[in-house]
Length: 73
Image (cartoon, rainbow, N blue to C red; front, top):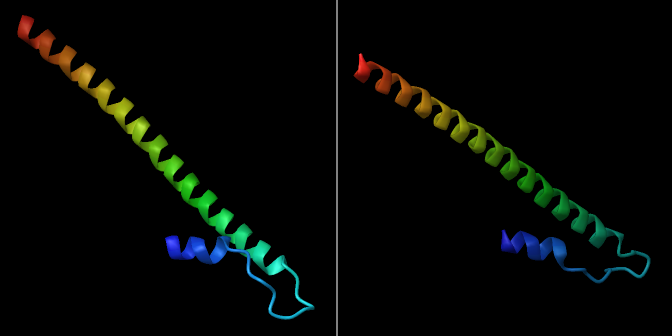
């Protein structure tokens, strides 16, 4: 990943005098898009895990009540 980052973040000198730095900016935008996508994927995964943890805690509470009810009977 660091090699990719180095390729996309370093502003390169134009090879020809008629070329501009627009190519370097395109690479920066591509890198930024990659990073935003990775962050979004990570956020989605974390939200899923939070919901899963909530579901497990509710399930555990119901199971505990069930056991305590049957021990009294």
